[in-house]
Image 1 (cartoon, helix red, strand yellow):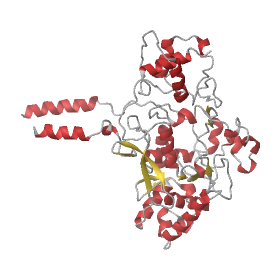
Image 2 (cartoon, each protein chain N blue to C red; image 1 turned 30 degrees about the vertical axis):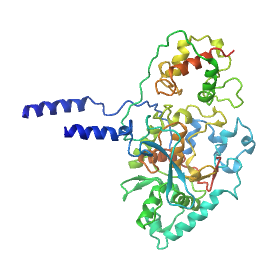
Image 3 (tube, rainbow over the protein chains, first blue to last red; image 1 turned 45 degrees about the vertical axis):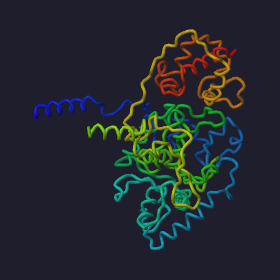
Length: 292
Length: 167
């Protein structure tokens, strides 16, 4: 009997050794990303047209061949800065935040130093000792809300509304996350890898469109750069009410026939770190509106 | 006997691809779910998506499945394709990236298909390009419609007939 077990164990361990650790996954690496918005100059080159929001050439917005170069996605027509659904969410977010922060516990939990909220949004995603991983602002809001018994699911309207309110306090602040070392560097590298990993029925990676085919048309849409995209989330969208960046990833997945993941999942957070690092140096601009 | 019974129950209770779906995928009962944002609510609503996508790879780190390898397919002559049906399929599957005759919103990610006949490609080559273009170019962005089970052999034959007659 003992011999039989030994043979079985040997066969099993051999089978385990024979199994490849990492399954075959198609991956097209690209190493030249810079964790700053100006890195776009080496990718699409469109940064020169949108780097200074005060000096946008609005004539380009009306030209279908040039519109994409503005990368001004948060002013999709019919944009009206004064009136859109994002403002309602902002009001809701302010009300909820003030309820939760009545004893200043909520802001402290989110990581505001000396009650200063202005820099919160620009410094997320960040490592959180309590969660023992890198988390986005929406995950922190869900976590800190739960500590007070409040359900604020990642991606829900109320969660995104609070995130939007906190972002609005830092409007104009440049995004600033440091991915040069530690867990954020690791998350950035994982995010970069995911950005190039092919998935879904069409075997697309994010980069299939957003690095290799920038400026080309998918019928009525023109593909834009991944740089400078994270500074206007959560965003008001007429079709999706209020959309966090993770829900945008889920929508991208569905559009390319890929099974989406849950908001707050680690792959989406790693992609968020990657996308946010590519927005470093670009000012927060909320509440924003995107088409449908 | 007892183990056989337990095994049988487990086998019956597991959806066809349920074993492969990672725990962070948005699924319920093996079905793809889409998140819906409810105004003034702290909860997301989940509704079944119009397509089930669990067969294919996800971005999850716990998804241990592999990408289907590039697959050659030798199309046997004659092509026997229905060009009219091929046109309908092209306007459904190809038009987002490729320019087709009569399209006012041309896609430019893929090459233009107008006057495709002029290239005089063999039918088998066009078939392979649609079935799995990675055979010719490992870095192509064109989906492998055959290998990934999106189009049946006759669908591709119909597309070949349509494309090869575009003058």
